[in-house]
Length: 141
Image (cartoon, rainbow, N blue to C red; front, side, top):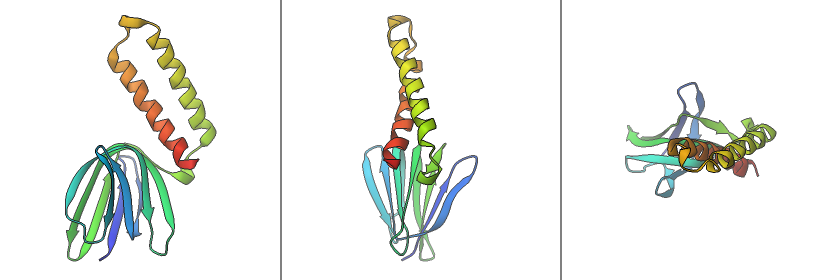
């Protein structure tokens, strides 16, 4: 049974096409989707997205969370990845990502040095940004 994959953000359609399998990281662990999969809705974690295209080609991306919706209609299984940000491996600027990660790490260290005066939300936001950068760097090796 065919699997149609759509990876979208509010700004753009990142990738759409046919695949043999989609592997994503949900908040409760990794999951694989193939044609004929049962309908589901999963909250995604920050992490990799691997699309095994027909013919064996692997397309890799990273998402910053979001949702994965799977449904089957008229014999076609469709997987929609809905994320605030999604980047294909080929689009990742490694040097820029390293620079951003170092900047966030420095900001987090400075905030932690301030003790109780720091808003917990500020630290959590920085931690999330560091996780995004780390996921991108891990994806491209």
